[in-house]
Length: 172
Image 1 (cartoon, rainbow, N blue to C red):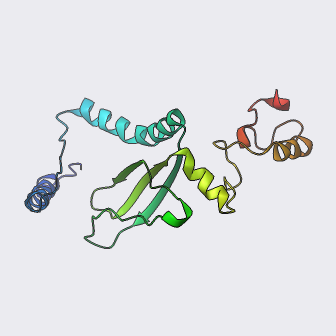
Image 2 (cartoon, rainbow, N blue to C red):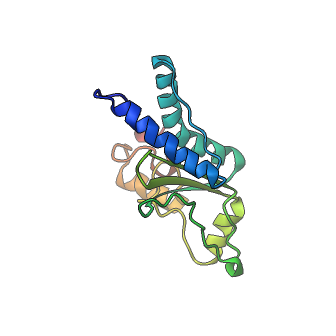
Image 3 (cartoon, rainbow, N blue to C red):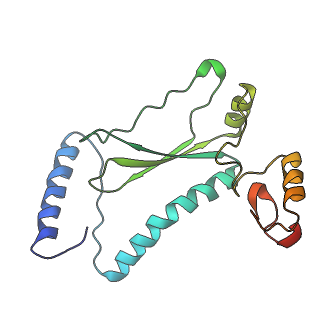
């Protein structure tokens, strides 16, 4: 939160503290960090933008598959949604759920990490991965797809790096 004059910050802090008190009475464990100076503000902002990259790094290091979803909750609903998984088709539950939101906004950003068996379960049910706008630069395209791209774009000028191809000219 920021101070924009006219006591807005103080009123917002009072509302936040009241909310926290009510949530703690319900048994919720919530912490608030108040920046003491501009250096701490910058550190918090840096942390905020590092979370998404950390998710990708975590998954790569563990050999997991990550999925990021954004969703809106109903007004005054701060619950963590229960994710339905089909045990009959062997879809595993996520091993990690990283969930973050903007204060006073019920849009949640959630990153879900799944073990390697998740991708196998999807493929066993006829699902082809990846499906996010082709392959992006995060997913390796099948060799036949990479070959087709090389034929269509021999200089690698149109979409370098897509499907884990080279980012360099002529696919060098």
